[in-house]
Length: 336
Ligand code: TYM
Image (cartoon, rainbow, N blue to C red; front, side, top):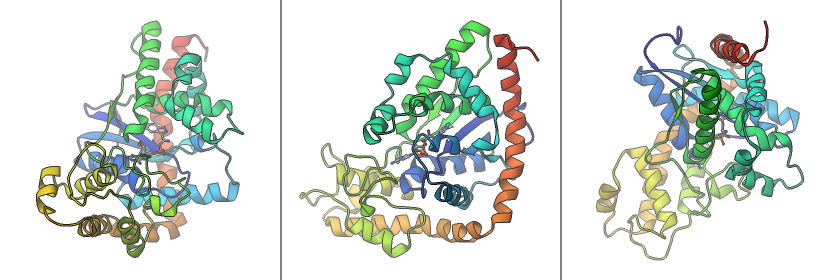
């Protein structure tokens, strides 16, 4: 990516390196990152949102390894730093600076309404820190620094993107057109991949039941075992219907990796049991993830390559984001 002054729309997104990347992260977000980058239609900028992870207590040695592993995973999914930067958020001080500024244009009431804040504070009741509360302004800053048009994310981030738009509009109404107003880009299928063990809850790497979540690093046997054990219902009829959360989830995953419509899936599995369908979903996911896992195993060993990739990305991201940061500081009244 040379610069962001051409006519292409700008795409920005980020992921927290808080553990191994899941099938949910991949289908909900990263698959679209790769598609949007490969289409050549957009100027894409992606980040590892490591500053976001410390709202929850981290063990330093584990955190360092998680960052490397997550970086290698995203490269393995197909992100190419020759085409667009994939940088590390904490290496660019503009993010922390912008977060502080935006905190002063974000209302306490708005942050209190964030469902992710309510969920996380219930889960970590012993550590409801101010960072957990103001996390959405850090995320808003990530997006607004790059004047992004589109933000590919899963549906759990929709509320944060709406808040980002509100903050940007509020700022612009005071100081003029400083920020581009971004839009979320949420896939039709895969926007909310559910737990394989409790299909009314989102698939999440922090799930205590290992069978609930498919990881990008899982081997083929593990993936198949998890799908064979997926919780379904007692109807034994593959069709998408209200209340059939387990089957609806498996159909969404299958549709997302094969591109088949729900009608086609229902037709193909007419008269077949859930056992056959679970194996088919397992195989389709294995086909999708196996090449990624193989590339991951290569990248994760190559620290030198990873460092080269993020170093050049960090520099480019700094340059692009500084333009917005300088403009914001000037508009508010800070002096040089
Ligand atoms: P994070 O790290 O929790 O998740 C990364 C991306 O994966 C999506 N996702 C899912 N999609 C479908 N099904 C699921 N079960 C599932 N779980 C996660 C998320 O929607 C997300 O797109 N705050 C963000 C990271 C972030 C960010 C940003 C994103 C920081 N700054 C700026 C966009 C723009 C987060 O915690 O995502």
